Length: 315
Image (cartoon, rainbow, N blue to C red; front, top):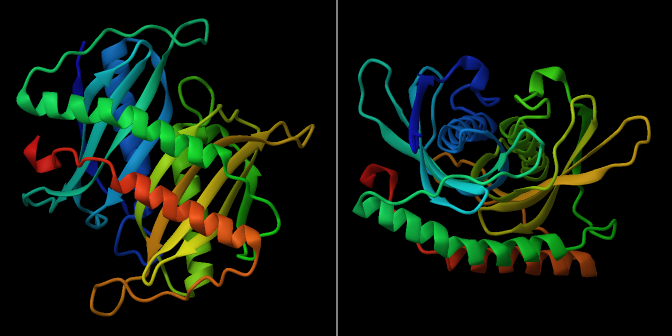
C-alpha cells in the first residue's frame, strides 16, 4: 500500500481560460481529483468515489506550458473513507523552482465489488507533519458537518432576484470514470464553467475563481443522464462574488432531476494593478435575497474558524 503519489505533467493550451494566459480553475480541480483518486485507490486497494472536496484556495495562477506537480497524500482514514491532502505547484518547464498554486482536502469512499462502501486499512502518521495533517483532518470532520448541514438545509426558490446561469446537456461517454459514471473531476469542471459564466454575466468582466469549497457529492451521474448545472449569485463583497452551484441529473426518459452535487465558489475580477477590482453590488430586494446573503456570511464565518493546515512547501 502507498499513502502518497505525485503526478507531473505540462499544462496544455486546452487547459487555458478564455483569456489564454492562465489555466482555468476547472482544469485545476480535475487535476486535484485525479491525484486524490490515484492516492486513495493506492491506499485502499479498491475503487473509490469522491464524496467531498473542501477549501480549494487558488493562491497563484498557472500558465499553459508550465510544469505542474499534483502531490497527494493520505492524512486520515475512517472505516470506509480516505482523507487526502492534495497540493498543486507549478514551475517553468525549463527547470524553474516550483511554487504553490493551491491545496485542499478531499474525502473518498472505498467501493467494493458489490458497489457498496468497503472497509479500508487504517492509516497511521509517520512524521511530525503527518501528525499535524492528521489532527487538522480530524478537526475538520465536525466543522465540515456544520457547513454541510447549513448548505443542505438552505432553500433555493424562484423568489431570488439575482439571475441564475443554467447549463443543460447530456453526460457524454468521455466523462466516464472506471465505474462508468461521470468522473468527480469532470463534474467539478462543469461547476467551475457555470460559476465563471455567472460571475462574468454579473460583473461584465472576465472573472477568476479564488475559492471553491463545500463540494459535496451525493450520488453518481450516469453516462447518458441529463445534467443541469445551476449557478446563482448569493452575495457580493466589495471585490468578490459568492456563487452557489447545484448540479442535478436524471434519466432523460423521465426528465426528473435529483441533486447530485453542490458547492460555493468565490470569484473576483482582476484589476489593472493586478489586485481584485470592485464589482457591482447585489441589491437585496426579496426575502430570499436577504436569506441567502445571510447564508453566505454564515459559511464565511464557519470557514474562518478552521485552523490552517501546514502549507504545501512545509510538507
